[in-house]
Length: 385
Image 1 (cartoon, one colour):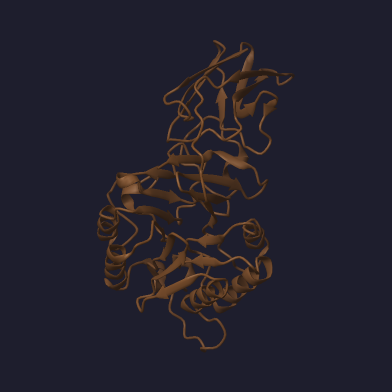
Image 2 (cartoon, one colour; image 1 turned 60 degrees about the vertical axis):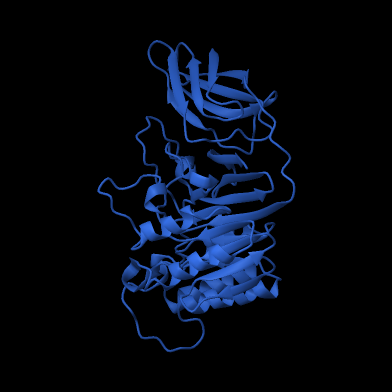
C-alpha cells in the first residue's frame, strides 16, 4: 500500500491525495503524527479504490493542516472486508505558523431550532463554557413563541451563567404569522436580545443599540455587530434602510481593529452554493455587500440558515476582497452535504459548532462535531494577516 501527496501550497491541505492499495475497495484519510491518526480529528476523505487498485481525493477550498499534524494516515479495507491496511506518510511541505499573540476565543453556533426539548441546545451552549463569548447567528427557536424564548433564556442562564451570549434573529425567531401576545415576561425576539445585551454588559461588555434593532458590542479591539434581517412571515427583510444606514456610518467612524458581523442569512456572493437563478436571501443583499466591501479594517461576516455541513466539498469559509472573511456556520442540528461523493460517512452530517480564534497575526476557524466533540478536518481553516 502507498500514499502519494501533491500539495498545492506548503502548509495548506489543498492538493491531490493518491492511494494505491491493490485488493482493497475503499480508503479513508486522516491527519496524523508519527504515532498515528490524531484522535481529536475526524477523517477528511473517504474514497473508493478502483479495480486497478488506485483511488484519488482532491482537497480544495483553502482548508488548513491542523497544528500537530506531521503525517497523513491512509486506511484501506479489503474487498471482502476481512482486513485493513495502513500507510503513514509524512506531509511533504510543512511550514510553521506564525506566533498568534493575544487571542480572542469565540464559540459560534447557529440554527438551534429550540422547541420543547432543550438537551441539544444545552449541549451546544455547554461547549462554550471556556470561551470569551458565544455568538449565535439566528434561529435560536423553531417557532418564535414566548415559551420557546423563555426556555432558551433559561438554557443560557443555567448552562453558561458566566459567559456572554450575543445573537441576532433568524427567520424562525418570529412566528410565521403575527400573533397578539400579552406583553409580559419575554414574549418576542427583541425582548430576548435586550436581555442578552444587558447580561453581557453586566459581564464587562459595553454596547450601543440603535432604534432600528441593530447593535454593536465592544470586546477589546473587536466590535461585534448584530444585524436583524428577519421579520414576521419568516421573511428575510430589513424593515427599512435604517439598519444599513447605521452600519455604513458606524463603520466609517469606528476605530476598532476588526468587526465581527452577525447576520442570519449569507450574502449571495459568498454563499457556499449560490442559487443559479441569481436570487438572494436578503432584500438588500447588494447594498450590504457594498458597505462591507469598502470597509478597510478586518471584517468577519458570520451567517447561518443554510444548514450546510462543514464537510461540504465547496468551502463554507471564504477569504475575499480586502481579506474579509465570510463564514457560513452550519447548524447544531443535522446538516446537509451538497455534493455527490461516492462515500459519505454519517459523522459528516451530525451537526456542529464553530471555534473562532482571532489573533494578532492569524484567524483560525474549526468546526466541532456536536455528537462526538471531534474537530472537523474539512471545517478547519487558518488565515495569516
